[in-house]
Length: 395
Image (cartoon, rainbow, N blue to C red):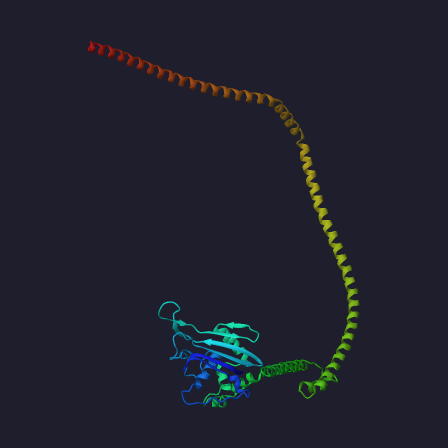
């Protein structure tokens, strides 16, 4: 990063606006700021650091101290820095929190901190947080690292020299953009570790197979197998031994397959014989079952024959009962007519009783009416006599 132009307003000892044309210092990349005590050397550091990161260059100063005590109330406190990085020019502008006169009325109000970053293509980023993030992305360092590598204040160079090795590695890695090499190194370490693990797993698997070998002592390969189990046999020889054992197993398997086929044929013949025996046993069982069912049918036939004889003995009684049944069936229409007549008689009786009850009720009503008429006549006669008495008194 190379500063090109620094503009400060009401910042530190600068009551008004001051512009520093840093581009005229050349492109050597190393600058020395000298002057008497109190001349404002540290303020230049603070202005550049504040423009980039929103903080002072020293740990004993804060952004709240940047407002100039000598500035008029109407002069805004702000810093603008034009800088170049990787051949591109950026402009960042900031102001801290400070008290300013109210736009309307009397008194003061707080001016909140703000920031603005202009990219080479004219794109503008606002807000303090977004500008801080964009600056860190452009420069690749934060405020503390910037103070260690870009602006060495009085005595601060020792901080970089005396910094721990890991911290210096981190700073130089960000300066020289060697993160990719670190990532490659870490990936190679990871791959080597993974391959080592896979190789160890393969060795364990081979060892497991070797330990699982079961070779009879009479076998010519038993000596080689014992060497493999004790780790005396190289891996290539172990592989060759395993191939020989596999070949022997395949030969034995083929022999076993032949014996299996022969045994299968014998088993087929035995199964066929067993099938015939089973069929004969099933036929014998069927005959015995038929005999048992035949005996049951004979017993049932004898019982039915006995019941038939008993029924034939009772046939005269059945004929007599049948005749009596026919006689009773002939009398049924008569009994039905009597039942209908009886029902009609009951209905007529009910109607008669109802009629008698209605007549009694009517007689009672007639008696009550007669009593009412008699009472009315007596009342009328009384009224007539009262009229005559009234006429006498009037005369």
